[in-house]
Length: 363
Ligand code: SF4
Image (cartoon, rainbow, N blue to C red; front, top):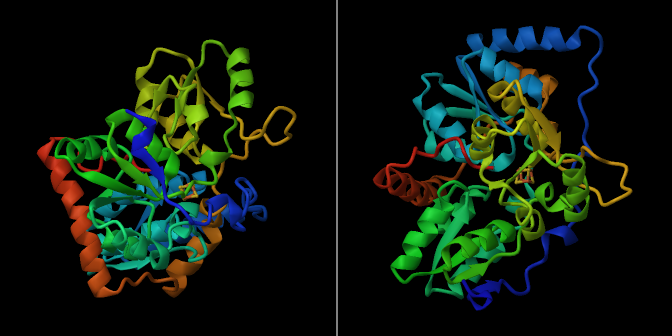
């Protein structure tokens, strides 16, 4: 790899310059005594009555993940959630996550009704890569193959040659690099830089970032590592380079969960959204998980690694959307078909490599 082969996209408003909510700024819902249990019972009944299945992202509230588990639904990453919805016979998919996940479910399941507890749940990667800027940027670089991460809008996916998950991105970019192709990568610059370091490919990087992973701080992490010298450090590659440099294992959400099961360590420091701890504790109940710090030395917040948009999904709005059928996701048909092409290419590539298809492993 040479630093020369990474180019940052110019003149793009950096994601941190925008007015986003802070990680951890939306806390646990404040339920009245007995309300949580009543809502869970009502949701279970409504899922059955409405021929619906709940698919929830790893980063959503533990209550939602629990309801999905207990009702024959599913907890995973965005594309695997959509794949599950495709295989499940229910006519309605209720997607607990952020907006692009509802769109992804619709792209792969056009015949199904797709509902979301809230349409206000965004993603800084998606917001930081608007199609109106991204499409002309691609047009200005026709010599490059456009590879986008799943955390993008349907319009951005429709402009891409490939859509990838974090588990297959390194393999795919390496394959394209071997064929002599130059890459235009979007939207996450940290993940793009990580892929470039692994593959040596010539990559032009869009400058997006995830506000949750970008908040991890290397100095505070080193302090935590000194206090837990036997803990293994697990890091999602959307994190900055300084955090990746401290990792014992870098991986997608599913790879992080798997590492906790397989590694001999008893303690793990986890640098990704803390919503993942629900599944990690299920997968490795005898192990201890410690959240990586998001503040520098002296910061009071030690557990803010939680996506404020994921936190907008809760039991009340889930029950409401099932009652009313509000918040249905629609994707314009031409856009949907184009986005599907780029997604299917990745699925075929994964199959040709005999990799688990999607593999529950995107952020
Ligand atoms: S955790 Fe980051 S990448 Fe995931 S939805 Fe939130 S802002 Fe987007």
